Length: 450
Image 1 (cartoon, rainbow, N blue to C red):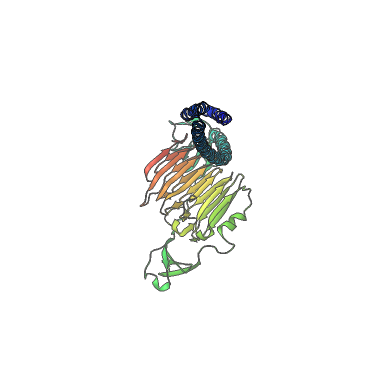
Image 2: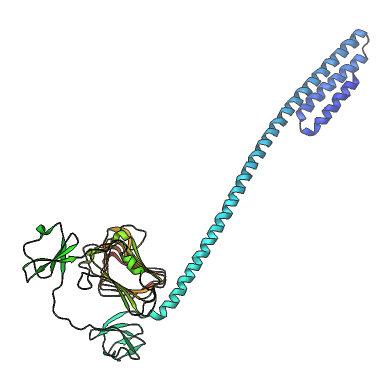
């Protein structure tokens, strides 16, 4: 019996370190009762008393053993629950760690992409700055100061007119008269436009519209009145007092497109190369591209009524293109009296990039699209817009990192959101009428309007 009691005492001692004070107190009470009963059993005077005492001790010992077994079972269950929770937490942390690794990889890739884009933007900004530094010394002062006079202080690159000729100042000067033809330049001035000789009085042609057939022609007309019928031009004749069919006058077809004519030209322009465009709708060709021309001459692309070059916006609707793109040209480019019909917003009607001495005269873009730019110059370009018309656009003329003279815009029935927009160090020199807009000028990022 004493061995069992001692064994029970040892099991209790093993649990002492698990913070079960209350249990130990109860167990110690039971053990003390068992020891007392055993002692009484030893000292019993009769065998019956000793047996009774031993039975009582055995009963108390059994109770103590049962209680210990129950507490051990409860303790084991608690440990099992704790172990399951620990395992669940470990699985969750492992899952979180895996996702964290994925997130770290994605963040690293995003950071690398952002760094690449930042480097590209830095290079683009440096390229734009370099282009400005190259262009500005040659175009500083690019302003039209109208008729020359002796009292005005002129700066290098100023424009003036005198006796019908056009001149550019070669250096700052005052009171120095530009030369007269046949002298083309002196130390201070260079003639860039010569007044033409006066021609004989003639009758212009006014194309009044398109008719289905000859029976639709009006009975009378005025000299110069004309109508298009199935591609033929009918002109009123004072000699016969009737309409005369002067022949086919329509847009080019097949491989004789505007783009084909441009592509057949040599890239080096020495004198003047001219492409004349007859009345017609050429918008199916898509964007017309003028790229890579250079030299001392000029490339002229002009509307042509079959008799003379057209230099006004009155009939520009008869010379319809999708849009025009001029890129990397270092000679003079003249574009006269063409109309952009492109309705999208991803490109301008007339777009010039990295090109010098581009002149748009009497061109138009009146398609209704408040997200579109009419005329756009960028990346070190120089040029002039004169006599043009632009309506119903987000921006009529936008200049980015370029220098442009904005002159004598025609005014129609529509308006624009922004008239002139100059950004990224661009310069606009304006004179006379400017495009009509809700906001006449937007200047940002180092842009200048003079």
